[in-house]
Image (cartoon, rainbow, N blue to C red; front, side, top):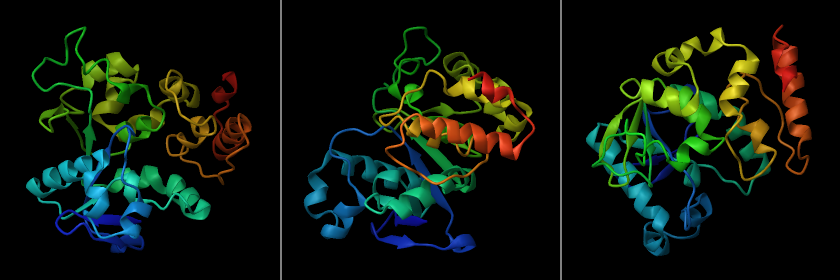
Length: 247
């Protein structure tokens, strides 16, 4: 995996257990995200420094440094998405990358820090982050998750906000407090957590769930809804749980 140095903006590739301790960022993609190609094309900050996405990287680096992390991971610039082989490996590994992170910061660009998350009409409850397919594993996989508002102020941890998030996501509070308990829930129950979430590409509705079901499979963008059928087969082959067939 590649990590970004929070001090120098150097991107370095690490192999296996050689990786440094790192902080991951979970977010929703917006306009002018800084990609791996942008980093490779010029020195940083350079032209990329004026992009909106670079402000997000700066905020992540500053937060990580304050908490003692020298290295960060963010999907926008730590994966070379022009390489189908690398993208496939990254998606099949991503759950474990989040699982092994020192912390995962969830940046909610549409949430205010000066309000009470528990309120029925709070921007926290309405955040776009809770509607996206990829963010399900980013909520469940890490050992520690900290939510940050648009101004990078802390809203609270997954543990502290577990009751509210259970109401928002329909994920059992036991899982939000202890992700290792995910295995106690059937495939159908886990699928229900993703049922209301959306992805830009239809195939990602399946690919984003590989880690949730602890399976791997090659990516075939263009296969459409067949990706979900392949996911069902992989889940059935890896367990005796046939409840996923209900979907």
